[in-house]
Image (cartoon, rainbow, N blue to C red; front, side, top):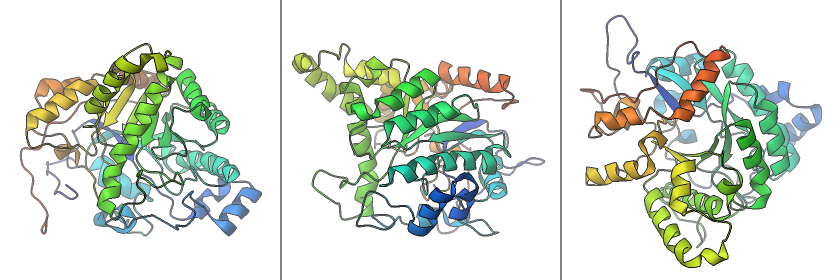
Length: 396
């Protein structure tokens, strides 16, 4: 699904009428020097001299090769130079215009300093990345929204960063990663949940991250294929922690979005938690509702990737259990597993269900606030119909 020929339409860009929201775009700096205007002299000296150090102290770079350089599509490298998603005009042409995306949410992953072993540098870089989003992207393209990048291993500093940007409607959620030093239900992270809930911001928990721990209970896997599927297991652990530790009971306004984690694991996780909760409720007296009820109310998911079982009705059952209005479109641009929006939603999903996927009241409320603030002129949020035909590029 990486590359498809655009559907030609006389007089307008390909797919220009396909109005939708993309909740997962990954911008990148051309060079660390782009952060210089937003860092103090001391922070810049540390970054330029010593660099960013993930909590995997023995590794430099990714722990596994990413199937493609920087895990990106081959056609995503800007013709003017720089890494993929570092050039705004090229991103506008290749993603926003090509696919008719009305709103695209930026999720800066690397280099962002989230989870850096030096907490002070992580705090400074989070602010720099957020300022960089404004100056390099949001100020120039009204279709884009930013994520509030936070130093999530420092709960108090992360909460302060959330409150700093909360009044800026160009930022639509808080960004965390799924691999953290401790499970996200632990008290050290509660300041993040409190700040997000008080500010009315959802929290996007994106797959990946550097926790300092091996990504399986048995140690490090052997292959990238194993690492990719682990995104789902880390997401399960984080959702289970937040539910059982009572995060959503303490902060009932909180909503989280599991981004790029898949979602077929949601129903069986809920069933298993429900079964244990019924027998062990005395251990968790603060948990007054069934875990499945809490998950359905507070947890959203993204379409990239969609697990596609052999029998289509199984996917329909899974999506129905989660809630059609809890499933958000994500392209994962510019990565190699990018989903073309014309093909991302399986064609067998009924039209009525597609309409339900665009009907989330909370999202509609956000769009209203954005329009009132002047950041949005027109918005049509609808899950598009699959293309009647498409022609694969040679070699696909």
